Amino acid sequence: MAYDDEGLRGLLPAMTRLSSALSRGQLFERATAAAGTTLERPAVTILVILDAADRPLRVGEIARRMQVAGPHATRQVHGLEQRGLVERVADPDDQRARLITLTAAGEKLTGRYLRVINGWFADALAGWSDADRRDLVLLLGRMVDDLSAHLETVTGDTGDGHPVD
Image (tube, rainbow, N blue to C red; front, side, top):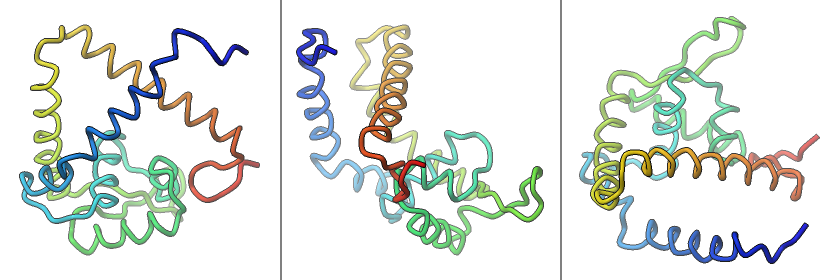
């Protein structure tokens, strides 16, 4: 494999700049304030994951998508449950198991938060065509999925604190 591929030469610097842009200026804090919540980043991440999944998820799946250990996700879910933002529902495939889903209040809060964030993205990409925006979302999602899967094989870690079998 060639590791000096000219087509990828600017990828890491661009990703570093993106990470810095997202971290700079307390964007998370501003977005949560604009959405009317004081939730911490991990809790909001769970709400966004559940919203994007468009179906209830097991806590283990939430942890995997967050790339954290299961107990961390469990604690966060418990806090969200106490706030009435998520609830546990029976798994139709296994009545002993429970799935996590957004409540109406959780959907409302998540919607407010995503409107703020997506509004910022829409403003920043206002000069882009709809096709370019769709391609960006598709390709960035594909890159994250492929990179995550590859890093699991390289590091031997699934991202949830458990080694790959």
